[in-house]
Image 1 (cartoon, rainbow, N blue to C red):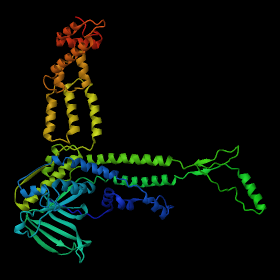
Image 2 (spheres, rainbow, N blue to C red):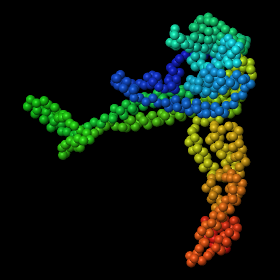
Image 3 (cartoon, helix red, strand yellow):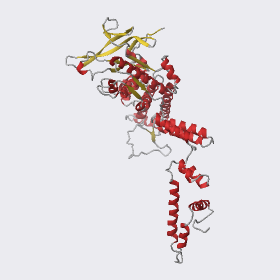
Image 4 (cartoon, rainbow, N blue to C red):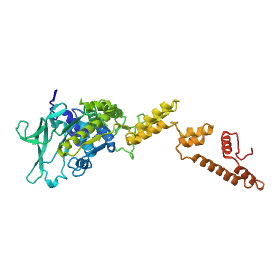
Length: 553
């Protein structure tokens, strides 16, 4: 069945908005800072603009998603029979992009940000033309990306690209070899019965120059998620920009208190009329005064004390509270967008992967990157004819910080201690381990931790609880040693050292009695006390039943 997708992407307001929100800086400020009202002059607007803080909360949220995937880069498994591809993965011989980038850097610094911001990104695997035989060992394919709006038209048959129209931005050089601008050009790829050709055009309607490529597939990959992660939060950042600008302006303008003094208007009017009749200038009571921390003024007996007033802080408080609310909404909406991310492909491969247990949007993004890398490796093999490759990404990711994870773990531990079910406690313990370290350790080490939970007889081993059980006589020292994973024999050695300390204390305290007589027999008696009896004596002492462990039997 023929499936055609004619996707014409243009530079529209939405994509421009997403890119400016993510990039921030002066361009974002200039585009989205709005006048406070029609009464604000251009000079006032420019003065406010110069001191407007640029928020980056939406950008920070996207960066957290990017970093949560990037921090698992060391756990990505890449295996290949191709030496040239292995070298490119390591960043050798120009790396993956002819800029010495290794595969992790290329995917996480070029591909992933564009995928998260625009919701779609294209990767083209190119190869050098007319490679000299003397350089064949160092020259290999290289990859670069196409933005969503540069992918003009795509036609697919059975999920394989059969026709593709791309837009390029080529540099224009002056007579000195320096870049003086850019111009657009176009590439039209066709795959007819396994024969790929490309036509280079100056304009879409041109005939162009066609070149046949000795490869069976168009080496282009489109990675996509349901929508840009900025779809629901871009306007929130624009609102924060304007709220922050208004708040700073209000605080700045309100930083000048106004002096007030109570006066009798009738008296001022009478004095003004009197001066007018006398031929003097009427000032209506306006007198220039010196006021400040070192200047005082007189005021009438029945008048209120003069003072300073200032604009109310309530509008500023309300605005700041609203800004805090918007910041929280950014996180909530981003998490909602991640949960709603789904794939747009319906291949058997995607269905198999979805059936493996797609538990979050982060996991899907990781799987989409994995699909892209495997296709890149396949196209690399088409060029080089030097073996197959397999790439696997981890399945577990998390956006929570360590502090949030530990807080949730504490809550689960408090629930575990209240239910007397060893199976329940083991399930909860595994969940805590999964949450705290699954994104930081290898699968082998994680499985080992899970096996240790399965083999444990006791799950809750709070040190205070263990000490209390020993004191109450319901737990032996030997079993406590096992629970705490101390080396075998540690408890017995501790008992011997404890007895020896008691002997030393007894010798120091009872070597001479109050009347000066020798009481060495007491020490001899302690030395002959059996360890178990001495420990029992210690327990009685702690309970208040035996005041002195050196007393006679």
